[in-house]
Image 1 (cartoon, helix red, strand yellow):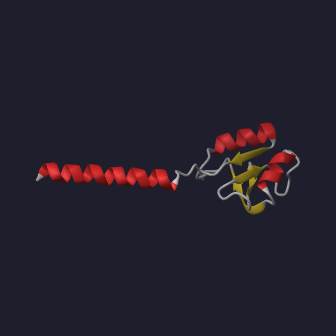
Image 2 (cartoon, helix red, strand yellow):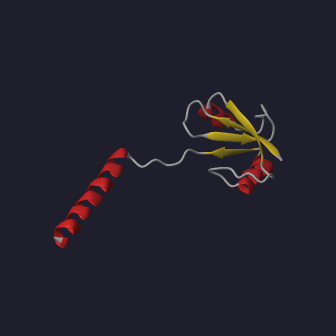
Image 3 (cartoon, one colour):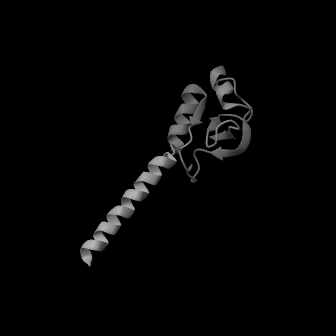
Length: 102
């Protein structure tokens, strides 16, 4: 089964999969508003050998068949502050280990 994949102009990393190109009748109005104007990316064969990067082909297919679309949300990003704290903690641990070895 071919599906059409669109990316959101409003939200980086958000993609919408629908059964047919330019067919959004099954997509709720609230989602259409939140998604913004869909930007066509490509047609994709969900039953082919290629795998989607951030979604399971069968899961996408099931959602399209049951509700008419599949929404792929952007991956969660760790806050920069949390990332910074984790890096600092790793450096401190490394420094403590280096001091014990000497």
